[in-house]
Image (cartoon, rainbow, N blue to C red; front, side, top):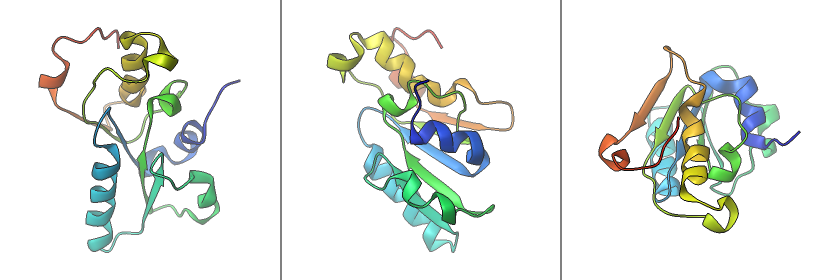
Length: 136
């Protein structure tokens, strides 16, 4: 079974997670959201592909904590859950050495939304997606 720290934490803490992905700007946006929540007095963790492994803090998470997680395509490729709040910044041709083609790369990124329901939030710029080969 293939999985990742992101996939495992999504199974348990979905409602606490703000997930950010995109080809460009993930670290900046993730850091900015984290800082905004911290300044509002919210208990918040900055996690994921930004350099802080999720499992370094997993035993400290509480029910009302916010987990702001930068999510790379490789981490999203096999997820079976989506964050409560999912943000997809943009999609550009990247990581073709691993994914082989743009469609597979885009599909991995779009998994951030794939398992959301009517109680979740999906944030994206539709102008960035008009001509993409997307199946989700």
